[in-house]
Amino acid sequence: MVIMPVILAGGVGSRLWPLSRESMPKQFIRLFNHSQTLFQETLSRISDTTLFQKPIILCQEDHRFIAAEQLRQMNRQPQAIILEPAGRSTAPCVALAAFYAMQQDPDAVLLILSADHLIESTPEFIETIQAGLTAIKSGYLVTLGVTPTSPETGYGYLKIGKKFSEKISQVERFVEKPNSQLAQTYVDSGEYLWNAGIFLFKAADYLDELSCHAPKIYEHCQKALALSQKDMDFVRPDKTLFENCPSDSIDYAVMEKSEKVAMVKLTTAWNDVGSWEALANCFSKDEKGNTLQGEGMMTDTTNCHIHSTHRLVTLVGVDNLVVVETKDAILVSSKEKSQEVKTIVARLANENRCEIKHASCVERPWGQFESIDCGERYQVKRITVAVGAKLSLQLHHHRSEHWVVVKGTARVTRDNDQFLLAENQSTYIPTGAVHRLENVGKIPLEIIEIQSGAYLGEDDIIRLEDHYGRHEGVPLPTV
Image (tube, rainbow, N blue to C red; front, side, top):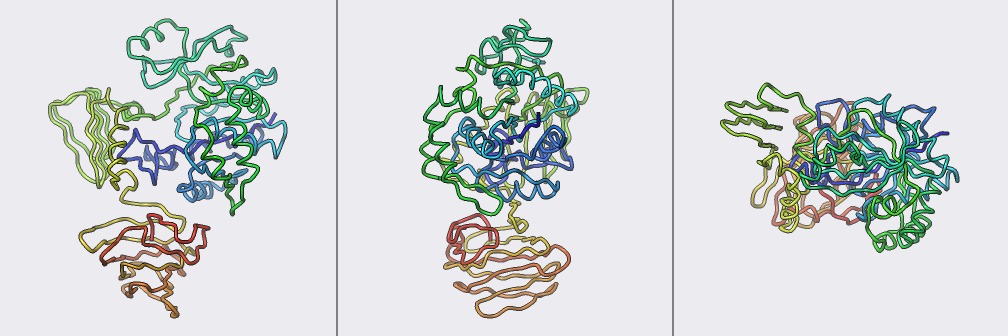
């Protein structure tokens, strides 16, 4: 029985702000100085082609080129990259994947994975999945449970029911995130496992249960996928139908209501990296319980975590803190309140602050750009264009631009002219000029762009032509 993995990569990771941003959420970041992102580590976990087919990826529109590029770096081809037209939680996303999978194989078996989980041992993970296959042959929807190592209040719990074997049992009930006292009771009883949010079932069985317990989600997703459009490697479900779909998690919509749910115990270490406290637990502690990533010094300090990206961070005489430093924002939080970072993110969203959306370095399908400086009527960026890549053909109504080539060779289109620029050469793009930048050299192209004008907002981009299928005239945080 070959499994078709489904990777849910649509989250924004708000509880890991300011490192995780809307434009570059945690699943696409190298959080641990590894060579791979969490998304890529998830792909590596399902690389056994004798057990797994090509995966279905679900992600947001804004992240489609990031996902595609990280797949390309691993030389992995997906079944499809399905673009979520709107955030509607996990039940509708899994429904889209299930309907798509059944178009390829009516008997498709799906493994539902989050793109941002850490799992210590891939062989033990594979053994757990193989054990779960015996349950789905009997029509069960399988969920994975993890033996709790602490009274964690950030996870849901599964109460162990009737046992089918040493590893497999029925789920007696699902329990939402408890308070600390109740969580301790669950851990002490030995009757509960953490809900890992990993599922295994036949696509048809999931859709049968969904049509019974959440028929509106079933109907909207079926119609949205039936009217989907194919765009390069991307599948775009109908936007209006999906936006009108109820929003619900797979747990609420199906798993908690179904009488056909079994649980398999995952024996290896697991972490959903759902908060700064959870992330801190992934690092080795010093003799005082402190953890560090980046540059930091601590004196008379206990149980603290420092994550620095640009500067030295120092702590003196404090306890149980998380301190996160990025180029444009700093977070200081008690460890036990680190889940509440999402309230800060909500405030930033209400105030339309840029710090919620973009990190200083922003990935794009053609490369990346980094904001170096900005002020009234000017902004400076460092732009890196990959070999063979090119930006959209575009114009601006309110700003002009100066480009200076730092490294590589650029082909510049400016109105009716086209010319090459080598290192240390520059050009001027007047307001209203139709322009494009291309890397025609053998190494990455780096330029410094100086924008000046009365309005420098990213919605002042009119795309006339785009190699990557981005819509004309749609504002994006790019150049």
